[in-house]
Length: 103
Image (cartoon, rainbow, N blue to C red; front, side, top):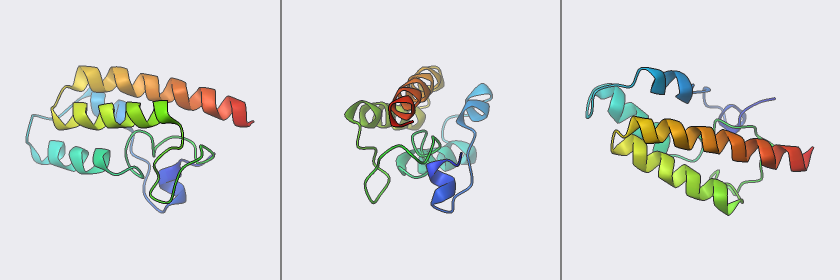
């Protein structure tokens, strides 16, 4: 399976690996992560399976996944990496539920 990001020609970004060793607030790495997290293609939702229904910019059709994606971005932007890790786990869980329904 491909991620949505890969389907759109972007590299897979391992958010779990990133959050295991997060950067300092406002560092270059933090700035790069903020840019990735704000884009639906490269955010935590975009790095899930490409079969999850989305609109033209990558926004998931599922409202719960949308809410989690926005929360994830807010956590990355605010350098609340513990909350981001928890939200990422919830994104992965919700994505798995959606994929199971589609399979």
